Image (tube, rainbow, N blue to C red; front, side):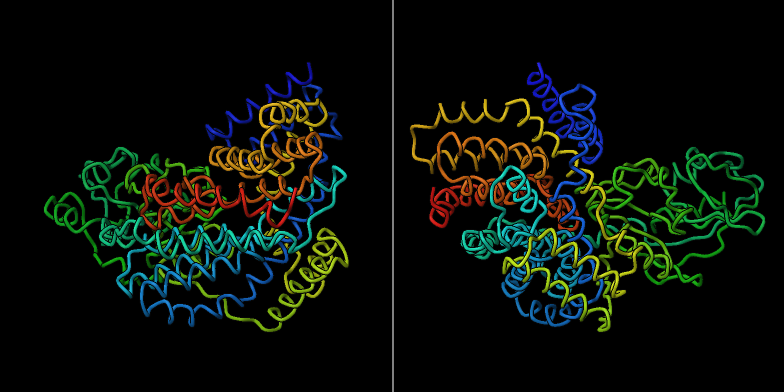
Length: 587
């Protein structure tokens, strides 16, 4: 009965992951709760994911990674990188791909790609290179880099920790680096030789066009005889006929703190709006409103506010919410002029649009407010590279602590859990990060997701589901060469990751492959490494991995672009991994 309940709950979980009704962390916790309520897992077993070594290690590594990131060390290289990248497209491709791969081996790949996107866009603008020619290689290179070390991705830490808790040896820091570097070399060859031919060249639809639909600011006064008096903004002809974006409303000399589609316009209101040149001419000719002034958006205003091109990063508080839900204008003293989701530009009903990670937002704000949004990881600035100045008093301790964490784990002096914990504590006690900054550096969405998905693997093990599946695989493929079985495991894993999260796939697959290796009486390590690599090296869709999602809108890609470029690469890596992994880790 427990096995049937487990299978049923996992099917429900897969359905919710695919349909994306809730955020991925909410779905993960919901699955964990269902296991507990159904009696499959005790409360202690269900919540054990929160004190699992993988969860704790990941939280500590977020702090260490953030310390290096915020110190400005990576930004210090930006000027040199941009100078080299401007030489030629091939130089830009090689520089950005290599830097993405190298840093992603040690720092959160989403943070690395977040830094490189605005740098790549800057090079693209100044060198007449289409952003679409650079951003997918940056994303794919980050995925390859993440497989090279134990701390390269949270999936690596998760797989190693589950194996260790099951009684097997944990992986060393660089234990699987050689097969990973081999696949990295194959992948880089593909990105440098084949990908440029397959990548789209969309210069005419770069992210610059996001600002072309609304490039004037105008202040209006609502006169007594205006047809919009006592109408809510959402039904006013100002919106419906002239498609303006309301930036602010001053009433009786005071700015309204919250503006939405239900805000009623009154006589004498002073409204600042963004409007296209064509509609501005029509507005002037109508004589329905008293126009005070008009200026180009890009030139800025006397109140210090200008327009910024931004992107919603992974883990932003805006994701899965609307501007109305987050009270964006009220909380951040900034206005959203336009939103681009994937390759669709949205200009109407902005307050009701559900924001997604990777969306582009055109923001009207003062630099101080924009800096605050960046610091809080609400948005990433694309219109210029937002550099952190190198603070050597913090940069040197951050770098030394990060190196210490890696070396102590690599030399097997202690486990990555302990070295990461000590590193995170040193980051705080040396004031490299304040306790508040350290707390904010942890991506709690990922922590809760990890804790939740671990319950799926625990339930499979406890009910015997992992053994049943492994026996089925053994009976089906047991008479074949183990390489064939490993190849099938890799194929199923990377296909699953395109519809599930990498963590959920890993949590499901690890107990199965451990049981399978026991049944086949061979080493478990080749199978575990196959799961690690397959969970990270997924290139076929923009939603298969967060960094793919991040480059989607800035590169103005279409879904088919990932299929076109990523599918051949996934097939090549699948075939290569089937031979490379057993070569370094014999059965």
